[in-house]
Image (tube, rainbow, N blue to C red):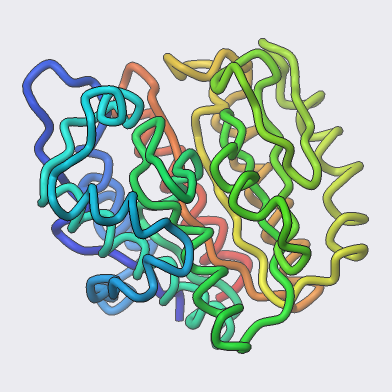
Length: 300
């Protein structure tokens, strides 16, 4: 069964005028249920991430600032949200959902988080709508317990996973691969284990050609126990922040290729949704829903 991490706290009310599409976290599960791709039995509600597990990835100084509302204006500005206790709690549920997805993926082959993909969060700071780095937290959780020996992070969000790259720069048990817009945010990029920057306006054919040339050999080279896949849909031509030229069909084919490679090699894959900022919320929801549709088709 496809297990999907979702909690009502994923939907968060931002101040009026803020244009981050928070409503997608409610609309994606509604759409999947309406069309019959899943049933309520597919959902699980994660518990809140424990402090001790936060500190496997994030610094004590940063965590203390978060829980005492002591971030500076500059630190809050880098995150891009007004940082409230309820937003911090939300991030803890999402990160625990990604941990649980790894466990479910090891049992069923794949598991998915309606949210997550918060790859701009560094060990000691938040950035780019990201407070906690859910992939880093999940990987460190299992590495610390000795349950998993090798992770491969496949980050196909349009923005480079700079926080993830920084956190794991000296950790050979986590290989970081980021394929992103070369000229997009962040301006100052970190060094992933493998970075591929693509040009503005790249179309489906050119994007998929690069991915298909690189990913299978990379998986075989790293031979991971688990793959963490960030399936951002901000690669779409319609995306306000993306600047690439991909269609929803091309984005869906991207997801299919990644998941088929995981399935063929019997490598568990845990998926977080990442970014999506198209003008029409329907485009964001449909593109994210495609990832779930493909996972259900391939694995179940």
